Length: 130
Image (cartoon, rainbow, N blue to C red; front, side, top):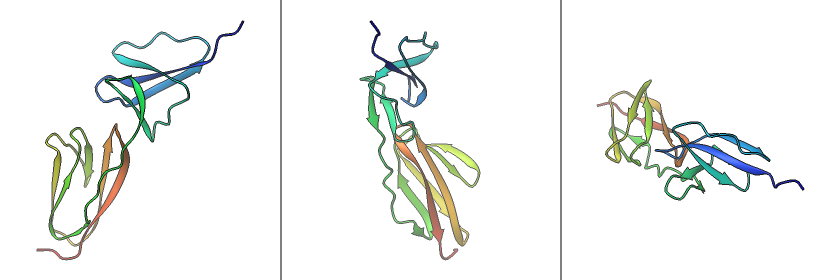
């Protein structure tokens, strides 16, 4: 008699980010320092993550992006733990907000990443320098 196939998802214990998955009839030994969850199907790493409290698969959220045509100061509320890449510098949001001073005319990408959110690139446009 053959056992049912299982899906094991290895994830980051702090963030819930999916690190790897295995689907088969025997469960491999988990790596140390990683969380292990089971799922009925393979997890879509781009749109899903593991809720570290319940060890269940959840759909990622989308960032709430404000008006991106600004001059002077761009302010955006972000979840704590978001990584933001602005002009080749990486910032970790630890207070729920990012503030960017725009002092040049142009369009500039802001890349956002968080384990519980779909990664996004926001184009901030400054039409007038001060």
